[in-house]
Image (tube, rainbow over all chains, first blue to last red):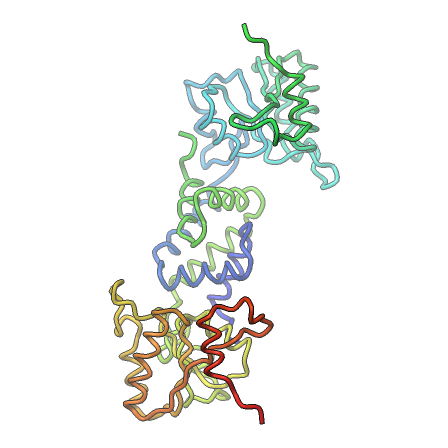
Length: 199
Length: 199
């Protein structure tokens, strides 16, 4: 009878966040309204604004409030090289870790027929149009190295080859700083067969 | 350059939640706007409403959107027995675990002079008025069993005794299901000295 009213509504609403159960949600809600009302207000406003304005980039499908995201709109990026990733988070890590200067295509998912996710759900029709328009010279497949990610990469690779576009996949191998002893056999096999000659 | 705009604002705003760092916040934001926009909208609305309406109960200081919380406003609760707790979460657990039928007084904190938290910051002046009004017959001190919690309980106990009000503290002892071998010596000493005769 005590857990009712607005506070309970906030707690229930917080449970929609990944990794947040009823106990954490309760702790979060109490923290916000006992100690950080400014934070709560801020969060409410940011969410509200983002819900209304945030959409997908017309070209690469990443999340943005503009028609084109900052990468697609950039004049310094090579618009002819496209890196295909599963999520906007992958765009961020690739930009942080590498000096990649091309653009991206964000699938916002991966092929997963059992979950009803086919090519159209992850925007592959849109990617196909871009490939067919002959403006892309190279396609880099950076989907995750999971079963679904590999299947998605394979599917897109076939499409790119049919359009005579150069296509590559991220290298598999020993992680930097990794010890051979502790690496799984599949990764080691890939690293072995993919060994590079030192010149 | 890529992490900018509304999505970044949401990520930054999520970081105000306890236990949420930049990585979790990013995962939460992407989850909301890729898979659960309804949840994001819901959360924004619940927070916004709660920020505007949620206040403290006039009588027991717990969080509520009404003048009196549901417990203080209840006709079936014994308004003469008051249980003093540190947080609204304690009210919930006591109501869930026990058949306590009295009311509460929520300190929303504990005495902690080093952090600048004195009696007035945790509403002890308000509690003193209630004690002085002679409407309270029994006071149960259910602050946490930490150094600050014990100090707070001691402080309030002195106040209650000065007003000739019966005052008690939650029992210390062996947790139910606990094995003696693994219980810390302080708890065991309390359990030993507080042993109860079987009649």
